[in-house]
Picture 1 (cartoon, rainbow, N blue to C red):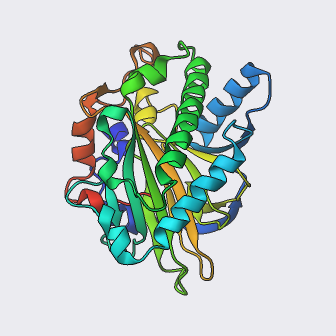
Picture 2 (picture 1 turned 30 degrees about the vertical axis):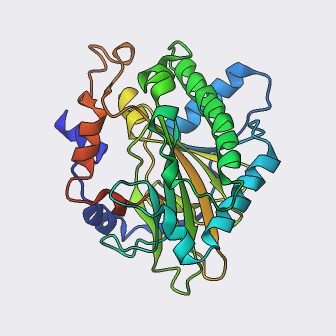
Length: 324
């Protein structure tokens, strides 16, 4: 069991991980699975998202039901915020928590960006002091996007549950149902001439259950598969879905918690809008009883989610964690 738990990457420090991956190669563009959610055959959708989660841990979804105009508006208000004078952005600056705006930082390696980080749901955990009041449409657009993002997340979790023979609501309930925490991070990566050296976000797997990312048109997200880094192809209006540590642990390793990273571009601005979905901090998370047994013993320890976070980031400041 100890050997299996090493895959959990709890005790593996970021510098160590980065050093291990430094010698790997870039393998070009990735044929990451693309799932068209307009297909009416739900059995087919279940098969496709489960297969992608088992083989890749990352996939893209198209025709997902989020209005394209709403996605465009989210991108516009995000760009407008980062275009503000620094003094205006500092109004929502971090002040001890992970939420808020932070300018460029270094986190042990050349890992830097500007970002805005704040909670989206449930309402009881939202602190609007970290939501920009300028541009004025920011809150309205972000709240509407959150409604659509929650519906899409629950659809995907439902298909993943059914694909493993579980009730549709199994994964959603295992991360807290309506109390599951949704957090938005808007990443702003300026162009840099040293794009081959500067990593916008270092190699990592996500601590939570699942992440859904809206990128702009500038590529930069890379996934690690078959001992090489692969660029994700940009698809207009697609949402990138990434399986996190907790879904990997709940499925006893059946789903992959994909290693991924982000790179900057030499000439173009890259912005991304990942929404991270995670259990409540006080929830116990581990292999689901229905997915383990004598022939498939648990590979991971059941832990309180907050304890898992503390173990994984031990020795690292939370604000310096690499998150796309």
